[in-house]
Length: 451
Image (cartoon, rainbow, N blue to C red; front, side, top):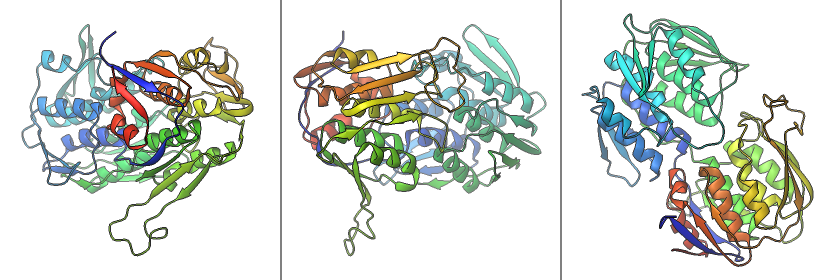
C-alpha cells in the first residue's frame, strides 16, 4: 500500500455547508470543444480535479495555450496554434482518462489526423469505444489500429451522416456532437443521450456558432458550419457530487447544505431521496434569502430522525435514475428498514463495491437476474447487476481499498457512517471527480486524517 490512505473515525453525523462547482462530466468536454474554435474560450467555475488536469495537459500538448483567468475557477484556452503532439507524449496520459477519444473529431478538423492512446477510466465494465469508432468512420474518418493506440485520418474531410446509436451512450453522443459541428452537410443522430450535461455541451457549441436542433424522441440534428469561435460559459453544477453528499447526510444521520446544487437537474434523485424518507429544502437565493446580496442557492439535505424506508430502484439513462447516483445511495439504503432493490442497467460490473459493505456489516446479495421491469442489456449474460439490500444494518469499521471513483466515495460514506476507525486506501482516486473532498469533510465536522 502507498501513503494514499485516509484514516476515518466514523459514527459522527456530517453537519454543515459545502459547495459544488461545474459538472465534471461537462467541464472536460467543454474543454475539448475549445479545440474547435478559432478564438480563445473562457470556462468558469471549473473544479480542481484530476480529470481537468488530464484534459488541460492534453490540450497543451496539442499547442493550446491554457491559463488561469482572473476569477477563481476560470480558465482561458487559446487554440490559435493547434499542432500535432508526439505519440510518446500522448501516451503519457494513456490509462489516466477516457477523455482522449473525444479529441478525435476536433483534431481531424484542425489537423487532418489524430492519435488516441489506450484508454483508461474506472473499471466498471468494458465501456467499449466501438460506438465512437463506427461514428467516426461514418463521417469519413480512416481508423488504423496499432498496438500503441489508434491513428485516425480524414483524407477527404469529414461529411455529415445519418447515425443511430444502439444504446443512448453519453460518450458516443458527445463524439458525434464534437465531430458533426464542423462536418460538411447535415448530421442526424438518433437514439442520442439527452443528459443535462449533453444539453449544456450543446449550449457551449451553439455559443461557438454551431447549429444544433434537439428534436423529440432522442433525435439531434446538426448542421455543419465551416468555422467556430470561442465561447464564455459557466457550466451546470455537478449533480453527481451533490447527490453523493446528500447520500452522506442520510447515511450519517446528518444535515448538509450543498450550495450550487440545482433542483431541475436532480428531480429524479430528489423524488427517490424523499421516498426513502430523507428531507430536503431548496435554498434558492431569491426565495429563501431575500435581500441577502451575493447569497448562493442550493439544496439542504438531512436525515429525518426516524426510520428510513426501503425502495426498489433501477438505474437508467436520463431522465431515469442516474447510474452514478446508485453507489452512494446504496450505503444509505443499508440503514433503511426492509428490502431495497437496485437494478443496474447501464454498467454491467458496477456492484463489486458491495463486497466491502458486507465486510462492514451490511447485508447485500447480488444477482444475475434482472430484478426490475426496465429493459436491460445484461439479462442472461452472467453479469451480477442486481442487488438486494436488507436493512437496517449496523456498520462497523474496516480496511477498504477503493476500486473506482464513485464506488470510492461510497466506501468513504460507509466509513463515515460506521462505528470505529477505518482505513481507506487509494483515496487519491476520488480526486478524479470530487474537488477538495478532504477539505469539505473537515468543513462538515468529519474526523479524518492522512496516514
